[in-house]
Image 1 (cartoon, one colour):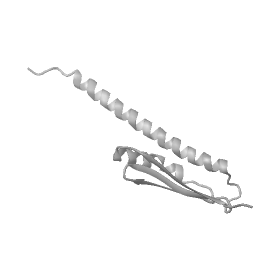
Image 2 (tube, helix red, strand yellow):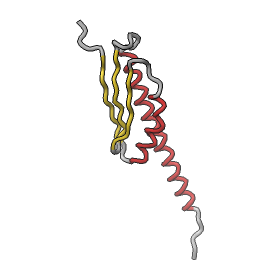
Image 3 (cartoon, one colour):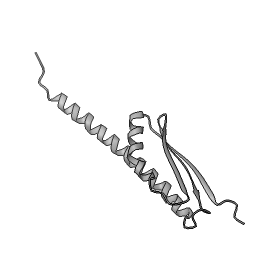
Image 4 (cartoon, helix red, strand yellow):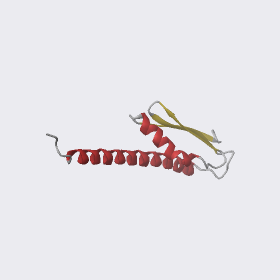
Length: 109
């Protein structure tokens, strides 16, 4: 006896900086554009969090499996984490460059 033929998900990735949240959300949006029949994903920003909600309807698409569902969620999480790390690395490089640039200025007398 099959109890359910659909899975609903809600994921949330909290980030302290709202500008970073919006940048990351934009960078991973294409990840959610092409989804197979039976899959509904919605990504949105709420406060300082990127959220993903959706459903996987196995009855609507017999080719969907639990493994493909987990892979989809894993891909989204990896994309968000990679974008987050990239933005932090760029911010750190900018800070270091500014510091180095400022530290080499001749002092005015």
